[in-house]
Image (cartoon, rainbow over all chains, first blue to last red; front, side, top):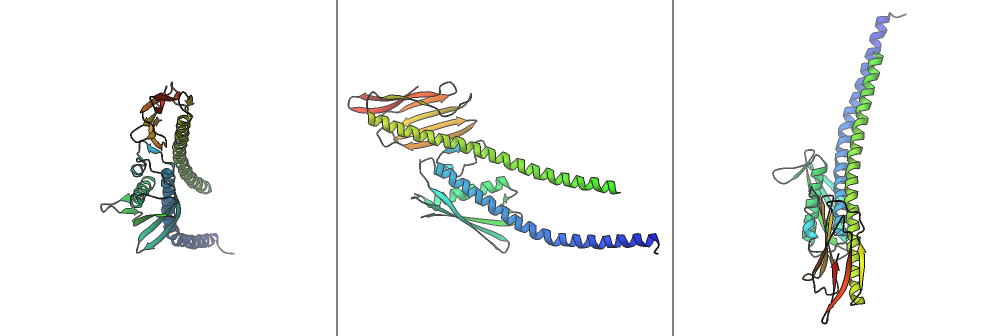
Length: 159
Length: 145
């Protein structure tokens, strides 16, 4: 029969071993989990903001609230233009730590100035992302999200 | 020791639950604000389309025809809706201020307007007349409270 002291030491050693295995596992899993979570959240943010922008332009009612949320989209509506836009897809790629996101928007009607519309939507998306996440705009006017540069490209195509 | 451990676990759990709850509340609050704005926007859009169609119908019916339109909102004190017929651009414009948010809608009118007219609707004035008038050979639609 073993002395009690010896058994106690054995248990705590086993516990330490198990704990170290668990902590090692956590250390391996968490960074991967976080990085995939970051890209998912930026994609979903951009997707929802692009959707909001399309809905807003389709509705054609200028809204000026206290935050001036739609500042970048309002110049597109003041002339009484009609839009019929919808979000086709969002493409994501990551090259050398820079995130590229391409937002493809289709128009089922004629758009007078595609460049102005895509610029307006792009600026709206950037402002929305900055307002709803920890993203920042740096001195070179780049969107920085969790230390990564995010480049958004908005393209409006006529169907 | 066992008791202390349990309370620490509980503390962790409570913290995580609190963080999740805060996130949910924040998201819900944001969605509610967005949906409320969208609701007012949609109502104004429908109101503008309704007015546009009514103006065109009234013009085609001709002189002497008039009807009364009701605002499809309950306007509180401080809210107002300004409906304008603009003869230079030939459009119907709606400028509204509801809950300190300003809205603006334009609708093209396919019949000639000739005369500018404008009504201001608020919590006490909630309806107005759309009338068809005639001066000489010119038939035109005006708004009057």
